[in-house]
Amino acid sequence: MFNKNLDKYKIILATGSPRRQKFFKEFGLQFEIQIMDIDESYPDDLKAEKITEHIAIQKANAYTIAKNELLITSDTIVWFEDQAIGKPKDYDDAFQILKRLSNSTHTVFTSVCFATHTNKHLITDKTQVTFSTLTDEMITYYLDHFKPFDKAGAYGIQEWIGTVGITTIDGNYNNIVGFPTQKVFEYLMSLK
Image (tube, rainbow, N blue to C red; front, side, top):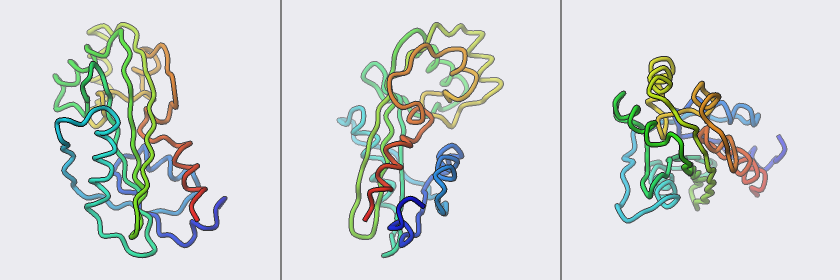
């Protein structure tokens, strides 16, 4: 590995997201998955990246971390019209979310918390995404064939809707997928 200091840690990735797990495999790191059912609510006065930062820390706080462990938690939201858009409740909610995002620009925030038994370090990234006009037929096709009900904003950029519906991206593509890989890797390489 590029940073031998990581050898002293047992890395725990606290996510059920196959996309985040895939990124970690691509880093070439040994890690284990531990998933807990965490309350992802947040105070009403939090906005934008303060929401993802709060939830990433809240997830980390739910674990008891041993001396040699490095726990990694994260959270992603879509921020649009001064409102957080998380995972859709159901098909109809997903449809309405994509109708709202159609022909407009939104921001994707992802926060990652690196927690040891002595401290927590937080990184956050943001990416702006612009959709072209999404017709009802396009949205229905996407929801029927890709079922993006586990994704913030009711879409996965790496899927069909991203290929046909996104006109511009300003920022890190992988952040939209759910993990700011460059910033995460940079932090891991800096660990002492």
